[in-house]
Length: 221
Length: 221
DNA sequence: ATCGTAATTTAGTCGCACCTAAAAATAATA
DNA sequence: TATTATTTTTAGGTGCGACTAAATTACGAT
Image 1 (cartoon, each protein chain N blue to C red):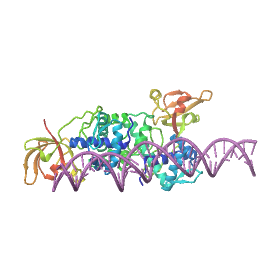
Image 2 (cartoon, helix red, strand yellow):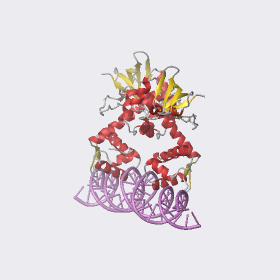
Image 3 (cartoon, chains in turn red, cyan, brown, yellow):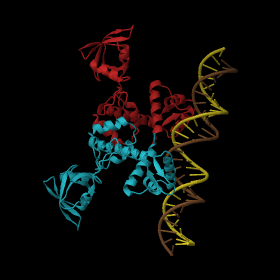
């Protein structure tokens, strides 16, 4: 079935909000997401319901049916593959990619997607550390958390940043932190939120709370 | 000014048809191009006229104004850059690229275009041998003609193919012909349209009329 | 359990990009 | 030149995806 860009965006948003809240998605939540009016959302979700992409009951919110879920996963796959491409091949920084990837994800061409995947060497995660669904929509989940939440003694691997201002990225490169870097949390100071870490079993560095909350990591084991 | 994909497509088509015919473009010609009705075209060219992208007079056809021409050239630039990308990096063959490039050319991101250009090493021509406009829309013209039209004694450089069936591409690679190959026309047989060429100052090969008309070349000097 | 507020839907409108049918202008031909 | 044929435009209509205003439903507090 051929979907419009708008329809695709609704489906992706429903997926995203469901993932976050676990609940059926309200018209208001979608209206909020797109900065449009709830009445417009009602229109659209009714149409998506007729196409059997979502389950919709008046006043009770909307959830994805299987067909819709598969559409959402393909979109996320394309979005994240393009993000990898933009960062690795075209010198985009982590926070410049989103807007362009929003456009690129709607390009229709199975060959384009699979060849891009191969060209990028079948990446498993995007530059923000989020997993890239495979052709069948399967997602390699891993727990993604803030460095500021990691307990003393644990070893964490850097998988992304929250916001990537130039200045912050320069700071990271100066202390030798990049994607894949292992950080052992040696100590945490609750009173100012700072953390002492050992970078790649070598240097010891103290990171401010701001830095720590900007770093996405995953735990070893 | 933000243009819709449709508006962009009209502008590109007007540019293309003007280039081919040299005349003002008729509503019918555009209707033909998009397989839609002339009445719909009238609607659109009126809107484009109000936006000062085209010059339009009732019953007299339409032509691009400067603003429109610049839009057209940027679209052609993006289209051809993407074609190079698809062929060189993603293993698309020369005749698979058009449809996807039609979609990709509408992506809005100046950074994407300029970085892609750099990533591809500032190509001057696309896989069909057509020139890629630079950032300012300037086009490096070169005369593109069929190998079947080249006079005896002249040296021609292969710059593209018309249709690229797998079988034809395999044949080319077998006789050592690829983009950039120099062909000296040793002889031409008018009665069956075949041509005898010397490939890269080495092998001598006879090409059928069908092969010769499928090869786009440019002349030395 | 009821009442008031917040959330949601319905009804009607608008621009875009197409359509059909009919009218008008232009071009071709006798 | 007059008539016919073709091209183009106008007028009015449709679905999409947004809107506003008004009606309806659901929910939280008393």
